[in-house]
Image 1 (cartoon, one colour):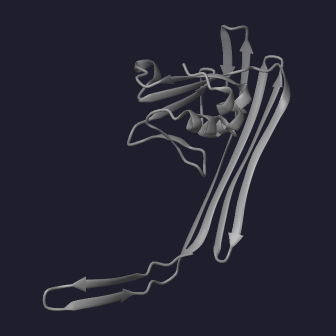
Image 2 (image 1 turned 120 degrees about the horizontal axis):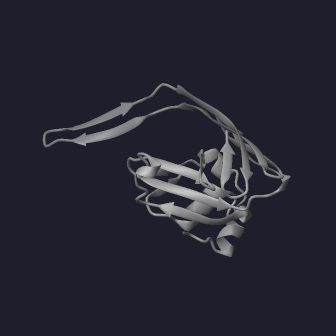
Image 3 (image 1 turned 90 degrees about the horizontal axis):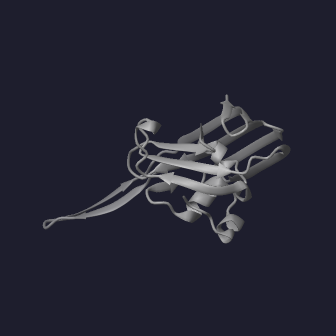
Length: 191
């Protein structure tokens, strides 16, 4: 069980950033997407209050709502093939709305970059509805030039390779919608 310090919570921007600040072993956070992965190979399972979620849902948690983080580095058969399980234990609000977003866009020369995220959570009594959307774009012309000199005992060869511009255009959009109903402490419906 990990209890984030007040400074870690205050400085973190979301649930993924909080994990980065805690620096769990073998856990790698992609700074541009917020994706949580294991170094090397292996499956990581992310959960919020015991319910399996995606990294986008982790990125939408306000750090102040996180009570603790349960980290299992040898989770056992209960979690399938997962090598690591990270379970965020959060405050369950009875009413209210939480909307958060990050929008990083840059356009310059022949390069375009976008990292946009929008998360919404609605709570009413025992119900919670959340929606997350994430968009990444990387667009640029890649040019690869080589200038090398090979020195042999008999002679020296100078080689210059001039590359042709190659368009790289990657766009990723993903979203999810989640509904959960919690009755007392012994009943949970999640879709």
